[in-house]
Image 1 (cartoon, rainbow, N blue to C red):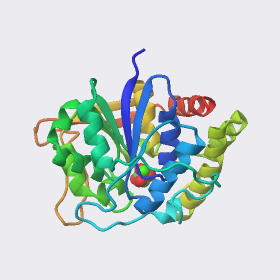
Image 2 (cartoon, protein in one colour):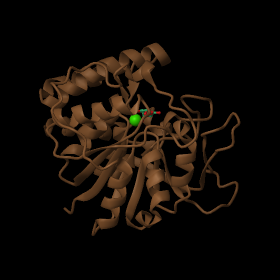
Image 3 (cartoon, rainbow, N blue to C red):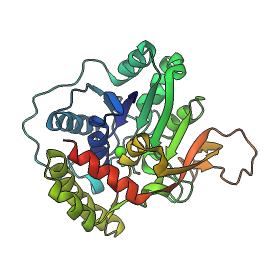
Image 4 (cartoon, protein in one colour):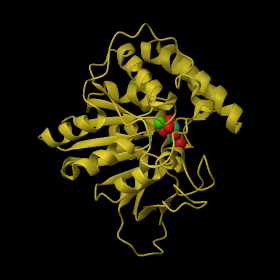
Length: 309
Ligand code: RIB
Ligand code: CA
């Protein structure tokens, strides 16, 4: 089967880390690079976390440092969930690798303009890097096969009643991407809130005994503790890996092709993904919005991914 070329733009982050695990060595995916931005923590920390993950998982993948700030807003980290380091709960070996010398925007532009085949860009953090790359060289849009993002919600948000974290961190960036004309698949809270890392999921993965399963167990225990403190949940929603699981097996998601607009007005709905599922406005659809997920199939993909290391 032909490998699908992907670039993963992220803000590791506990759930981003599992997205990297899944994307890092699947036979159907060619992970061309990881670009990072601030979000769950500052860029210094998310970037360092990405390097630690690539080194620990023995991935031969460039890590490119992105833009440290959103386009308009200030950085607002999510340390209550991801901790001071942004990836609390795992003691990585001494870091011996460094960033690729290309800034994320340059890497995105160079890779997308030089690739013979279209590339899927997966974002699991704020969309600043991708948006600024599009603005810097709009020609890259022609070679983007699909943007698959973890972000948004057609119901409630998780940082305001209206908005989800990745979008609200940088609404203007999301607006640029959603109006770019690319094929967009939005994996929002509506489906990611169904894949909760209950203790029995951790117990299911523990006997796998690979470096990846050890990482999963230790990170998810801390992720659960923090999510319980903040949201009172018994299992943390494993948001980001749903994007990669979808690329591995598109049947895990049910999607609806609708018009989606990002609210960039500075009111109570700032950063909301307004997905017109009922088609009230009769506007041109621009987004495949995930409306359903096969939860067991998702955990089977996670389990298989942990076993591949
Ligand atoms: O709202 C969930 C998203 O915000 C996830 O990507 C998580 O990593 C945080 O970045
Ligand atoms: Ca993330």
